[in-house]
Figure 1 (spheres, rainbow, N blue to C red):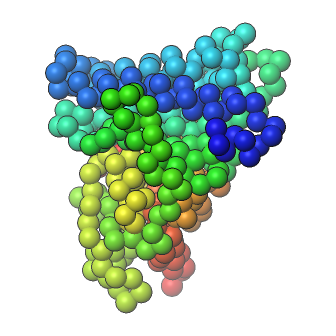
Figure 2: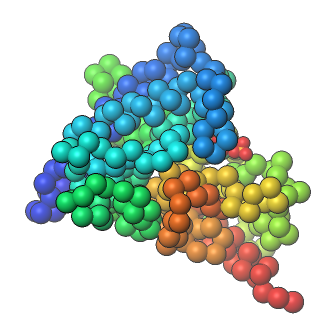
Figure 3: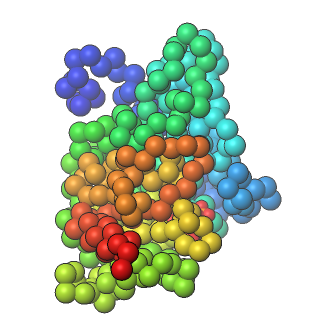
Length: 324
Ligand code: AFP
């Protein structure tokens, strides 16, 4: 609301949309906290479009987010990592915003009580309001996001978001059911102390990626050796590195040239957050925020975190590409 006042033209709809997402986050958070007590743990037995086993909580979170925004008149279309195609809001209720989200990222960690998260990305509608919203509204370049962020269901539940004016973190106080501003204006350290990567993929990486990871691990004159931290839950890995400084990598490999992470639901929103906090995000060559999506579930190599570390990775990978 404070930031809304900086924009006299603002109608308050974006603030209200963020508030809708807070409501969804509280409901999901409650369910995640009770996950070990209820029948909700474990796989549902069905696969999502990317071939991952869908978890029951995934589907619950997917519907909770959609239900929280679909009939408000603020959103025209939603697209989720868990759905095959976009879901258009009822014609008479289509508003001016587009919501892309990963309802429960890191969901294979649910059964073992490890932090998971919801990631969201908000764009303005680009199709004419005279017709139905469509795919063109979802396939927008990351730089055009008007807001992005995540909710981390960790030792506490946190909302971290940006509307392009810095990054702010709010912690859910469960006794009053409200998110309270706990981390105003988050700045990520320029050099990280952690590197986060699934090193079991080492033999599938290009020599360039191996060189980057080896340098983070052992130091190489230009950068100091870092400590390793990898949870396997993107929001949790990202959040730790954002606060403490670090670099997260999910590069392409021989199994998947584009890596594992999705551009629209994971990489682009976290790229906006990290850039607003003073860090960088790249696919190894181009800033993530400049990538033009071609399809909804597109994947991208992802290197994100402290500025000096991401720049270092980009330089090493560029040198690797120069023909001998
Ligand atoms: P799940 O949702 O299947 O647990 O995948 C989580 C994730 O998309 C992301 O949160 C992690 O950073 C990444 O995958 C971990 O992938 P690896 O298991 O290949 O390291």
